[in-house]
Amino acid sequence: MSPWIAAARPKTLPAGVAPVVVGAALASTVSPINWLAVGACLLGSLLIQIGCNFANDAFDALSGADDARRVGPQRAVAAGLISPRGMLAAAGVVLALAFGIGLYLAALGGWPVLMLGLISIVCAIAYTGGPFPLAYHGLGDLFVFAFFGLLATLGTAWIQVAPAGTSEGLLAMPWWWWACAASLGLQASAILTINNIRDLSTDATVGKRTLPVRLGPVPARIYHASLHLLAVAGLLAAWLLTGRAWLLLPGVIASLGGAAVSLAVFRHHGAALNRQLARCAALELVTSLCLVIACSLGP
Picture 1: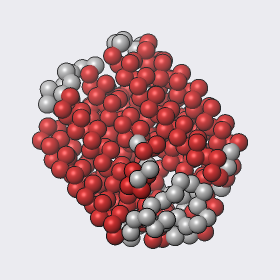
Picture 2 (picture 1 turned 90 degrees about the horizontal axis):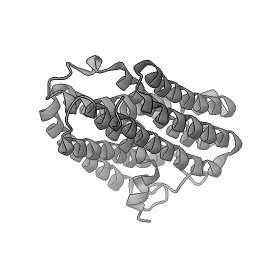
Picture 3 (picture 1 turned 90 degrees about the vertical axis):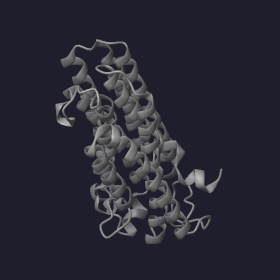
Picture 4 (picture 1 turned 60 degrees about the horizontal axis):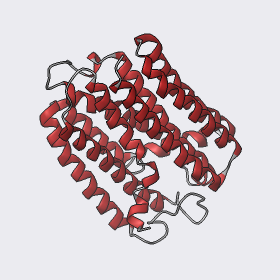
């Protein structure tokens, strides 16, 4: 595999796809879909995720977080396959492309879309870089929940419904849209948590104070399981209180898949967690597809 493709971390990219397809599906319940805008949202989300991954590859290598002790997949910069300068330049190009797409989306959804996009791009860099790297202070989960849950999902929906005059803003969106968006954000955070549990010992030695480092091995696994539990709770609440029968489907899938992944994370350690990381990403994608089905089939 090309080091550039590996650096994009394709197994975790479903986290960037899921919120966009769900946001479009939610909007489709009240407004016709602008498929060009959906495509732009999808591309923008993936570019921000890839740009964040590129920057993370470079900054973690420079900080020493990725070294010979690493048990996760090989990182291009740490392995000497790509220079730190080259990787950071690539991250800049990718995020600049995301900004260009954001300008088009802002023309559809207004200045709030532009602001959300700028915040997302800044956080993608600040995730492991800058004077206050979010991941090194236990705030990576918050960024992932916000971007890969609330912002990407509701931002996509906003762009669809705002031009049609069916919504006055994010806060005016149906509450069950927020519940679905939060559930996806929690599942995305669960993906990150598996990654951080796997790297717990090496992160601790270089001062990368992720939540698993702060919590410890067993509490971190309990935290991971709680993320799945809360994601299921959000989906089931949407089902119970809206009367949309098909919303039971993603809730059931998320509960069964979340239980299986959580149990596996408790049983496995080190490199064995790489498979669970991919399974967790697949679970989010399947959950999102079930949400799309639930929205398309109506109440």
